[in-house]
Each structure stands twice: as structure tokens, then as C-alpha cells.
Image (cartoon, rainbow, N blue to C red; front, side):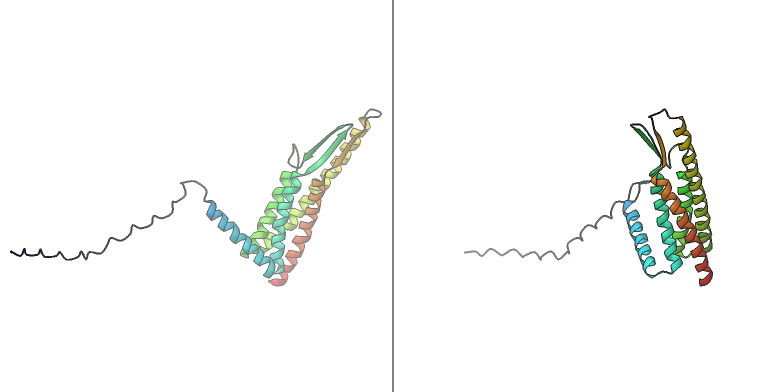
Length: 202
């Protein structure tokens, strides 16, 4: 019986397996499109800085944040009714942003003072410009509010005089205008206190 020679065994393949394919990087936002994630992170960081400043900052820095909050309140006040007219069963109101309304001007004044206040509170810059702008903006906002209140009162009297017997026309100042007056007075006080405090701290 003839023995068949065994075939030599091939050595096992010792070649290492290929490395896994690299994970592709996250897709970049479309060119020109808004990066909402970055905007959200920036907003969170700014909010955290504001909270930390309000807790540990100086009095003037806290006043800067209050000035920013007053600017937001000025926007709300401009949206609310500034004048209301009631004639019999009919009623109509107009906001500060209405035709010929001064709400746009008062909001822009508050926005300048509030922006400088937030810049000082978070970055420590423009200290005196913030205090001066707050007092000046407050004086102008207060003056505009008083003029509008007087104008509404005069026009209301004129309309009541021409009303027919039994037909009452009532013209009154709205809550938005009164709130704007309060904001103006608050800016005056805030600006004066901030200026004196800055002088003391410097």
C-alpha cells in the first residue's frame, strides 16, 4: 500500500485587518445659513454672565443690567395702547407704534441707554457714556410722555365739545403711555445714581 504524501499546510495569514474607516465630521451648516446651535450657546453664555454679574458685580454693573431690562420694558410699553377713544358703542385704541406715535422714538432712546448699560455690566466698558446716556434718554422719554399726555387731554376736550347731546366721546391715555413715563423717570434716577457711583469707584 503506497502512502500518499501529505500536502504541506499553508501558514496562517498574519496580515493585520485594515483599520476601520474614519468617522466623517459633522456636516457644516449651509453657506449663508444661520448657525442656531452657536447662537443658542452664545445666548446661554450671555445669560450666565448676566446672572453672575447681577449676583457678584458692583452696584453700577447691576444698574447696567437694569437699564437693559428697562429697554425691553420700553418695547412692551410701545406695543401697548397709548390712547383710547370711546364713542358710544364704538371704541378704538392706538399703540405707541401707531401712525404718528412716539413709541418708536422712546424705544430707540431706551435701546441706546440699555445697550450701553449691558455693555458696561458685562464688559466693563463705556461707564460714563452709559450713565450720561441713561439720564439723557430718561429726560427725553419723560418729556415726550408728558407732551403726549397733555396733547391727548387737549384733543379729548375738543372732541367732547363737538359731541351731540346724548352722544359721549371719551378720549383717554392708555397704559402704554403711562408705563413709558415711568420708564423715563426710572432712567433719570438710574443714570444719576450710576454716574455718582462711577465717580466714587474711580
